[in-house]
Length: 313
Image (cartoon, rainbow, N blue to C red):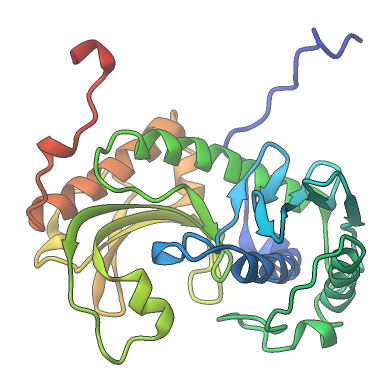
């Protein structure tokens, strides 16, 4: 069959992703991502709100994008189709690591460091998990070694769809907006809108929080579930949270407000979303309703921040 004319198979935009089914694989993959994320943290120039450390959805998996190193760049990309980690430099050199069941975090970490050495990249990272349920240093972690290719591929397919929706949603806002990006400490795929208003930073806040929460925001995201929330879900929160936020209406009707550390968070269960007739449109409604709730009560200039179609300019 001619690959140029072949019709690609139809794929479920929102495939099932029950946490319990793939949790062991997720935990291992999460730690792989932290290894690469820490390399990006070390090599990238600082950007506001930690945008320099994040990973991004690609047409084959998740990647760092080009990272500067001396006179050239390094890119690390997880390929969740062929299940490889590819490391490329702008000099033309490359190394690859096979992702497969039984590859422990310790072995993955060792292979990554050796590949970097071959590529002439010298980088030292703090070789242990960050804000993770595992506290085992990467080089000693022979516990996490589960990698189910089908499960990882399915998770990535979800990320591809969610990334598309978040990209569309982010383009509707004129104000400062972060890239759609994956924060590897909690596996959140997020986009955040800023009002431009600076807010007081709590003196007791961590260094991460001190840079993350310097300005008023409304954030939106997806995460696959964790020890506390046992299902994949979409969320939105407004910071600082205005009084009465949890009384504002949300769409679709499956969405609700929950208390998170004393503040309301809008939640939409992924499984409930995927059962709807038009989950993509329902997700856009969820994002917009959560934004309108926070922006209205926080007195953002909502109308001024709307991006209009070119036909209306």
